[in-house]
Image (cartoon, rainbow, N blue to C red; front, side, top):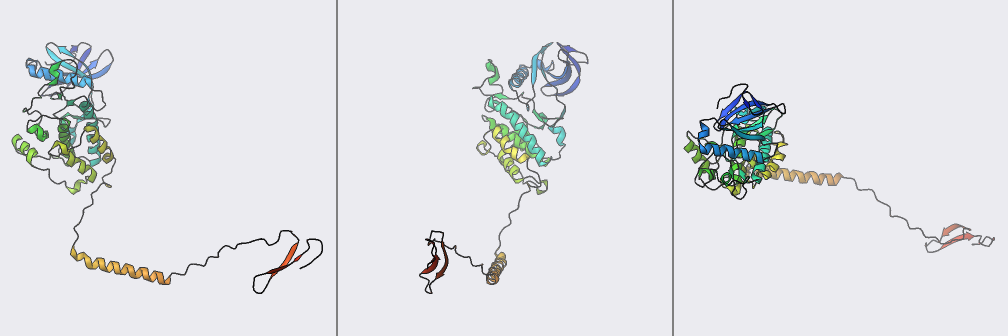
Length: 366
């Protein structure tokens, strides 16, 4: 439905529109009870007639309400207004990652920080058995204070073993094998093949986003969605331009993100966030890759001359080095008399006997 400034939805007073997307319109509103600004996401009336869209909208409300993490947008309330469902969420100030990129790469350190925070938020969802399935720069929000928020869980899948609430309908939404959901450029290979997914599918999508942050381009290109999906299945990402100065540890993590088979990726978003924490602290200068150069046979004469020269220098230093000073052995001292009245000792020529004067009884004697 179309709101106008001043429209009231219960205690919320509409201030103005923020934006619109495939899953509804977003409006800024004032919570008159608490005196705070909020965002209201509403499904337009013509969309509200689509039972599938309504189900997805309620799915997102339940998922977001079940998550409590600083890197996931917070939901305060859900309801219906004149036949249209709505969500009341925290009002975010900043911009989407898509708006920040503008086809220009970010500094590797900043890209690693964004990827780490997104992974932390996603790990909270994964721990509850929730797969996002539609990760892209449009639903990564960068707040003014520099943090990352994960948005738009409308296409999320909830594992049957971990239902949200008591309603079984939330467990199987768009989750049948053979169904492709998501945005083509950010799909995992198993999504393209329509296979059953696990959390490592989301990690692949995060890898595509990280690649785009580092290079300004997506790793898999094509003139159509079909060509892009073929590249995701069959082609490896190109080599990174060395001018981007991507630290080698970050590149290794990036390649793991984009492994074609899930077994080649990190096991969980939490493990991934832990690995990214170290790379986010690495400066681009200290992270520049060392290039291994091939060893050639032409290097042998130089190395031989270097070795011989080293030996000659060592021998010369050994010849001119002064002999170490002689060290005196400690002298052992043994008392021959104990009276305290003996004096003037003298050794015999052969050194075997000692003569001395004694006054032990008051009379001198030898």
